[in-house]
Every structure is written in structure tokens, then in C-alpha cells.
Image (tube, rainbow, N blue to C red; front, side, top):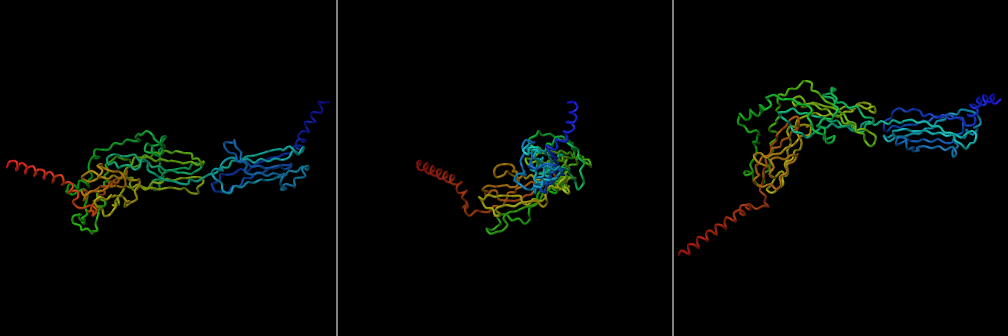
Length: 465
């Protein structure tokens, strides 16, 4: 008979369990990716025939090891679900719990869980739990984009082709944006590189330097430019002095012209006849650097053999596409050689003993990449004894009168070309330094020697007499 009872009990178990335990299903509605700053509503749907105990929302962090409560509903202290008191009545009840995040941040990215508990039908002390989870994918558009020249400032090489690298730095994106380069509005067809170019070592850390390409130039690379040859054949100076210059000896104490600035004099944009293809090869390398806030910084590098004749005044742009952007963002730079540096001297009326500063205050055009400035003194060394000085400013400490009329040359150059500008230093007398002080000091020992010599002669004459 026992064998006959087992099928009956087995048939009743599926009916008894729901009556004693009740049933509960929990589902969270899936979410599409959202953008930083959006308002998001998390929706947890649950279906049950039991009496509600609690609803808890968790934000899961640290790979699932930490659960942080962000919302709790406790039915013991709320009458919101009082219509569920008739728990003996078998009825499927549908409910929804929502949590609203008004302005999501990148840190809100991650999984969320909804836990729902109902009372056991039999004891009302035990709690039946069920849960579901959803992943909130928070996207962030790039916040900044910049185009730099690697290995800058760099000199202009008249006789050798140079490798040149543009670096586009895009920060704040999540996920990583797509970066591409354009030239004059046209997308550049690039050759991927596995390793970053050597020129970008300063931006990426110390790396061994190596040449990316080698191109030989022809025999004409050692010839001088025609403009300089014409100048020398005519017996002219390689720079032109201002015809209205007034020398310091001809100026009165209240004369207004104090310094002479000779603007652009020699623009050495002499290019050898390098052999270049019409379509140069552009090499591309990209790096993704994870940031602490969950975003990614992308550094994209474009490297090619620079041809100043072709690349001068060329417009290059870095274009960034991202799913959080309605349209691409971009940053543009125009490659240009420096032209016409504007040089200023301070003080404008230099006197003996003053500290004189000669500074470059811009150009006649927008210059990219950043120029390299080199100062020299025409026909001699600088005041501190050096042959040249690098930087936008030349400082002459306590200038002596001997420097009056001396000429200084500023060479500004970048990989696309170079230009020279000269300025003449005019020094006036300083009333605080008496005239002839240096001469009287230097002649003192000479006069005393003469006096001693005269006394010796007189002594010899007296002894002979």
C-alpha cells in the first residue's frame, strides 16, 4: 500500500509548496547606455501572491565584493502595501519599485541589484527572497582635445629631410573615442604602427631613439640659396640697416630714438631638391591610457617625412567620434614657418650699467609648431662670453659703454623654416656714473710711475753735481 501512496503524495507536492511558501519573481528592466549628466530610472518589477516584507536596492562595487544600499523599503513600518493583508487569497499581484538617479556620473557605472522579500505563507516568520540585477553603462564624451608637435621646439634642417610627428591627445572619454587625422579636410590614409615613433618619446616616457625612415638627398643640397648668392654678388650685406638710424654720438641728451629694430632681414626658407612622392606615407600609432575616474585618454600619433615646400601652410585636423557625441569634435592646426618676429627692447632708453632685455613678442603670422629661438652677437660673443643663447629673451646684465652700436641677431626656426631678425643696441650716458671714471682709475698707476721716474732722475743729477 505504501507503494500506492507515494504517487499520490508526489502529485500533491507541487500544489502544497506554493500554498505554504508562496511564490515570487523579480526582474529589472534592461537599460540602454546613458550619458554623463542624464537622469536614469532603475525599474524593478516583481510578481507574487505573498505578503511583502522588504525591497532593497544595491549598488555593487569592487568586482561584486561590496554591496552598497541605495534604497530600502520596509513593509513593517509602512502601510503602502496594506491591501496585501488578505494573504490567504491566492492572487497574483504585480508591483514595481523604482530608483531615480538624477545626474549620473562615471562613478555610477556598474551593476545594480534589486532584492525583494515576502513572508512565508505558513509561519509568517520566514522570508522568501528573490533578486535580479542590471548593468548601468555610463558613457562620457571627451572633455578636451589638443594637437601637439612631438619633439618641439626643433630646429630647421636645410639640407636633410626630417621626420615629423603630430600628437592628438583626447581626454575624458568613456568608452575610448575613435580618432583620425585629416589634411585640408580630407581623411588621411594611414599605415598602422605597432610602436610609437621615436619623436614622441618625450610625451610617452624615455624610449630609445631610432630613425623611422632614411632618405638620401641629391648633390644640390650643399648649394646656397639664389637669394643669398645674389646678395653677395652685389656686394651687399646679408642684412639691411635702417637708413634713418641715428648714432649715439649724434644724439642729444633728450633725443627720442633710442634703439634700432631692423625687422625681417633674411628669411632662410631655402629648400634642397629632395625627392618626395606626391603621396607621402603617413604612419599612425594609438595608445589608450586608463584614468582613475574610469575614463580613457587616447594619444594618437601621425608621423611622416616633412617636406617644407609642400607642408608649409597645410591644415591638419584631429577628428574624434564618440557614441556620446551627436557630431564629431575636432581640433585644427596649420603648419607654418615663422615670419617677421616682433622684437622689443627694455628699457627703451638703455643707459650704461642698465640691465637690458631683448624679447620676441610674436610674429606676423600664426606659427606652428613652436619655434626655437637662438640669439647671437654679430661679430663677437655675448656679454657673458657665450657664443649663443637659446630662448625667447636675451638678458644683458649691466651693459658697458663698449656695447654701444652692437648688433644682435635672433634666429627663429621650426621644422618648416627659419628667419633672422637683427636689432642694434644703443647705449646712452648714465648721469649716475661720472664721465672719465674708468679713465682716471686706469691712469692713476701710470702717473705715479712717471713721478717716481722724475724723482730718480733728479736724485742722480744732484749726486753728480
